[in-house]
Image (cartoon, rainbow, N blue to C red; front, side):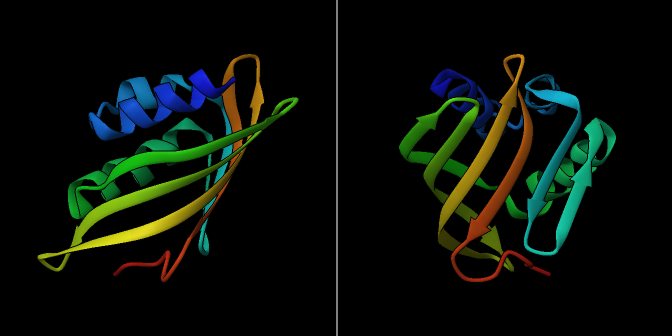
Amino acid sequence: MSEILRRHVAAFNNRDVSALLAGFTDDAVWVTGTTVARGRAELADLFESAMTRLLPTLTIDEILLDGDRVAAQLTERLTHDGEERTFPIAAFYRVRNGCIAAAKIYREGSAELA
């Protein structure tokens, strides 16, 4: 189960949107801040926008597993308005058939970077 998250983070850090989307169910729901993305098309828009504007990378600090659920503490590094920033993240995932079906992401500080 932790391998699913490791593949997700590797695809994210490589900015490989195709590999990233392959790790989601067709009906996946992703919630971060006030943003909700449903399905692969909305997820593609969300990730492509973030990867272009913020140049983020993730590091997994800790993973906890319980059945079909994964909780993780991560560190996100990104560039916003030319300034490098670091945010601790708590992420909660539900997995179905080897893919992420739902995720709720909490970023310390603001999840809404304009």
